[in-house]
Image (tube, helix red, strand yellow):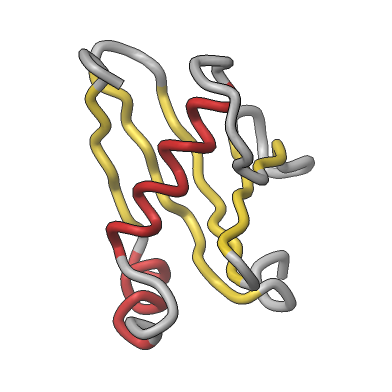
Length: 96
């Protein structure tokens, strides 16, 4: 990951979820999971990240899983990778 920078932008919903569920998931854990997912998507690293490209949400929108919690994110590749965390929620609620 040397030479790769990430700039995370969390939606209001994502920030609210993290505040309410600090015992289940921290901001650092979200960022780590998303970075691992991006590394798997871009074939920089073979890892066990569970990441799927979302259908119907546009190109470049992905879902990653951390236990029973889903993180929906998108990113723009460039000198600085901009990652937008769109939604964080439990499995049954994230897809609505």
